[in-house]
Length: 289
Image (cartoon, rainbow, N blue to C red):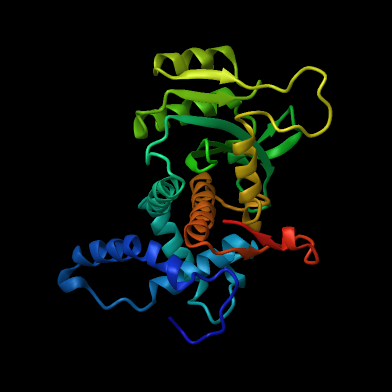
């Protein structure tokens, strides 16, 4: 670690202990492929992760990283390599198992929830990877996620907003069923079509559509589905996710994995973080997890 002044997004010692083994193993594996282990690494992995978390949490551009971090080109290079090598997904899976154990659950879930969220994109996002969500009247991308019943991320898929929920959901469910064969139940909303129900059945998964009771007005949490809605709320604590800024959809997925890794690490260590909501309200000033 450097002697610089800490930022609120920096990893504490306790959270770094959870993440460090995965990053250290990644670096060792890469160096072992080079002759004589190659040249010694120039940058501290913890500082690289702190810089990536700073971008995810504050929403700033890579080039606007504070100068006391490593060069932004280097930080983005690590982010891109970690995304390509599946490091963010690996961290998400590892911490999810630890959180489930902490909550007295089995490490492998037996039920899950699917939902989709359409978001606007920045001017840097290629038009070819965008689309229009006619229902929500949003031009941009769609984030489809599967969570367990605690709201912890199992899988994420970023597509053009024009992709129908059932199409993205089918791909996600296939991915989740392969990674978590114990899944036997899934809840969705009314936007998922009949063929998706039939596809779930071929995987041995009972799919149930959870809908609002007829005549319900205003905000009313829907049983079983409120957990995935809450997860989207958690993700919005990371300003980089308030809009899709990533050129590649897979980098958007990495930012979501990173946000969940940050949230779960805080939950495991009992740490909280300052919200940008009303600073005079104790309930809003500290966000659990």
